[in-house]
Image (tube, rainbow, N blue to C red; front, side, top):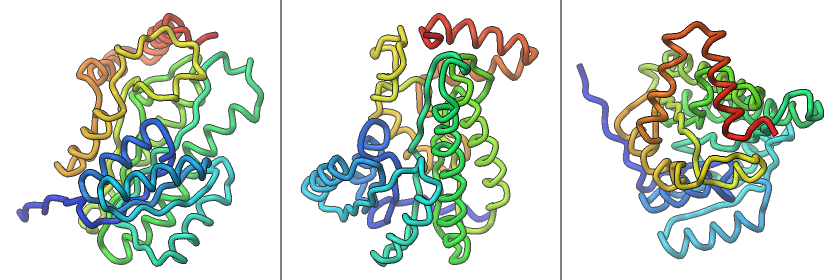
Length: 269
């Protein structure tokens, strides 16, 4: 059996969505530190430009910026058009951008509940298809989809967000099988609570020191990709252990336990 060649980030071109802050920014910085050129995508052009300047200065890599709102269904196509204008052929796509609102499902507007579906699922599928197809045609490249440990069980008070992450998990695992032997790889990363701005809109009682740092999650994710993993758990061991409950207990019991935990963390408010 032929041993898979280890992936080297140096000199490659990686596109990171949601790159202006939080985990996306951590991925961009870690990739630049490993020598990867970058295409940074997010809504905030000013923050992206500031990051791009810093990455060029500190790591001597190429860093391009594409301003896009992935809550707009036309955004993925426009991103592809921008890449073509830049003459950039991607080696790696990191689908990191995500939106999530905690609280009771019926306490929020329909628009708010549909936004995570568009950003986390629709845009991810579109980018995976549009950019992944190009990789498949040339027989090289890779995609890392950022999921969540919340994808492994229904989670009350985070219902829509975790449902979209369950979608991402199953999609990624299925595509990883379809892509075997193509020269293109798929990996799904499932981090747990991470100390980023993501939790600022959630009145959670979880202290930041109990969360994983964005830097450690980014580092472990990229290390796992080099190792050839399909499913990455880039957080602490307890996060991974928590996903085992849904494989043992009846689903209704799992949902009840998850709802209790979610409520105790303050997500029901």
